[in-house]
Length: 44
Image (cartoon, rainbow, N blue to C red; front, side, top):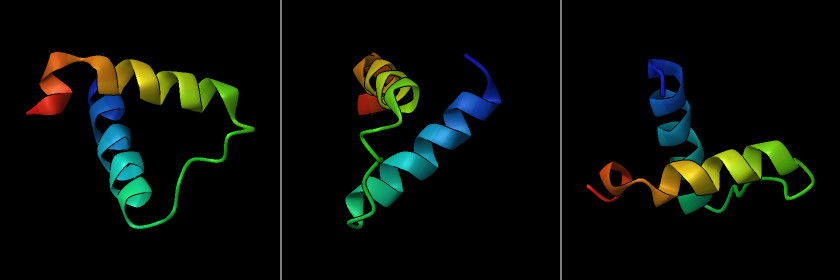
């Protein structure tokens, strides 16, 4: 995990919360977001 992962997760998660969800055709980004969201630190 890098600082880039943390920052990108914050942006992607924020945008998903304001009706700008991840394009489901972007399989790698969707999988990455799911892995990041599954981390215990993401729930904090």
